[in-house]
Image (cartoon, rainbow, N blue to C red; front, side, top):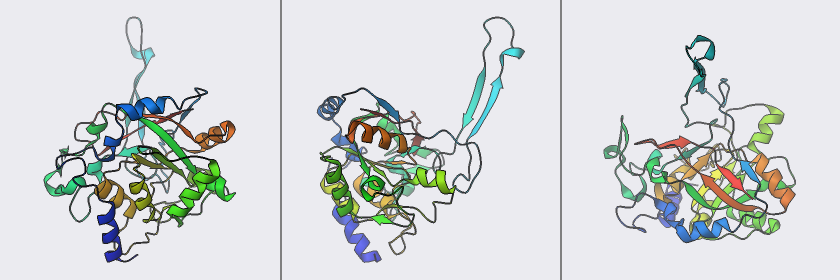
Length: 303
C-alpha cells in the first residue's frame, strides 16, 4: 500500500470529533452502562480465563527489556511478629513480551494524537496530559469476541508476515457462529504463543502475523470498542510504504481505539472450543498511572 492510499484509509476511519472536540476516550465511549449490563448477560458457565502471560524476567529475542523481580525483605531478617516477605517489580511494558494496553497517547501519526491533538504539546518527559491510561481508571468491561484464525484455517498458527484481511475475519466469525455487535472487544488469535512454544522465540519487531490495514475499516464500520491480539495486531514487515506500524496508527491515532498487545489467547481458545461459543464477558483493570501511555494488564474472560 502506498502512502497516499494509506492516508485516504486513515481519513475514512478517523473518529476525530465524533464524541466532541475535547474527547479523550475514543471508542471507549461505546462501552456505556447499557453495554456493560448487556455484556454481563453473556455469562453462562462462570468459567474464568486469564488473557495475560507471566512477567518474563529472562532476556530473549522478543524480550529485550526483561521485567525485574526481586525480594526486598524476608521473614528471617525481621523483628517481632508477624513477619513478612516483600518484593519489588519493575517493568518496561511496551514491547513484545508483556501483556499491556496502549492508551491513546501512546501513538501519534504525522505529529497528531487521536482527535487531532498535537503530540509535542501533550506528551513530555513526565508523561501525557491527554488520552492517557487514566481514561480507563474505572476499568474496561464489555462483551468480548474471540476471532480464532488458526482454528478456522485448520492450522496451529498463522505464519509471521501474514496480514489478515476483513473477509477472513468475517468468514472466521461466521464459521464460529459468532455475531459481531457494536461495542465489542475484538480479540484476534494468530497462534503467536503456540508457534513460540513449538519453534522457540523470535523477534516479532521484524516478522509477525497480524491484521492488514484494510481490516481496520471493517472494525470502524462495526464499532469495535477495543482490539487485542496475541502479537501487537500489526503484521510485519509492514505492508505500507513509510509506515512501520499501520495498525497502531489507524487504531490509536485515527480511530481512538485502544490496543491490547501480547495477549495469551491459547487458554481462551481452548475454553471457547470446549464450550462451543466464542463470546464472553471481558474485564480489564489497568494500573492507575498518572500520565501513563499504557499499563501492564491481566484481562479476564468470563464465560
